Image (cartoon, rainbow, N blue to C red; front, side, top):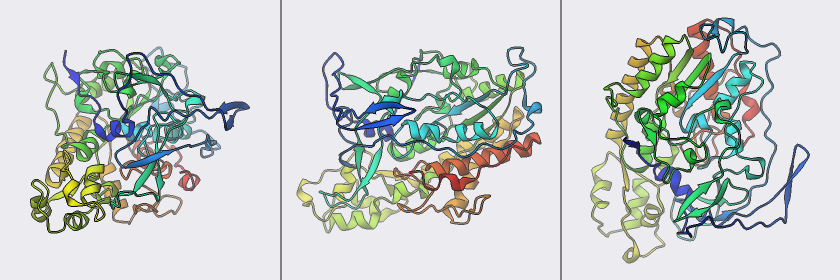
Length: 463
């Protein structure tokens, strides 16, 4: 059986480690500080051995637990009787069941990491509150592992003098139990996976729906205890009245790491997994919607290092594969440690080395966005589902022309804006609320329901 590709460096760079022993290395517990969660004491545990560095990290730091305050639920739950899937006897006479499928945005990935606060402020969880769902089960880490797979926090420290923003990697109370042969071993989710409602995973792609997942190097799936069953059937097995689908990482990962993924025409049966999944859902009478993909070319991530800065760092020196692309145009810099060093005027040219995959091909990325979105729209239309136009939403936000329903201008600037998180790609908690409202608007318009919109101001101060 063909397996999905291992998760690429956009995520694994944030989890870089040195080689380890065959058995999981023990965690060093340093209980010098503690947090309190629901009356329980959570001691600070330093896991620095697991989070050695990220692509532009210059050290480690500690992030204490903070209460996750979500927006107030609607005073009156909306009438969603028409959204119920009454053709399924297992769902009849039960409260609305909502299933979220997707990748980094749906999972709540932000600040270059995957952690409980991000998961809790993911747009599916915010939508669930507006739907009146009392218990929307998320794949949370245990409360003592609240920092999950870590995150990046800004720092002024810049030993190499490069122009890219620098971060310290949160290294305490993570979701890892050890290292085997240099591979991170996460703690598995303790709850029954059949109870999970948010099945999003950072790095998941719709082009891999026809296949199972190769665990090697993929801690996101390893903790979910999944086998090699094609993911579309794993998703389909989860009962629901309503679903949302978002697979932006098909483009985001490629643009940030190697090359953007074009739409894969089919699977083993000649049918694309996304089409098969939507067809199965439609046959069962499930309601739902699917998002198209924004163009990441104008995201802050690709402005961390500019061509002008790169040219300044090289001076009058020539480096094959770099210098010609600076003058050619049509490329964006991928801000790795190596490219940051090349753009530094502080580091001598003689010790600079050309990194792998230094540039993003602008034309290829935009063609990939169009290719994926044409197929997403066609599949949705054929199976009777609406498309959430995230591409248009992001275009308006990046132009600085988007205001929320409660009057907040969505600011795409970096690092002081309110929409993009520290990683320059994924949204802040406020950005998640903006996206949640776009999904809600689509559901309201298509299914003629009246799900209340979120007051986004509640998330402006969540960082």
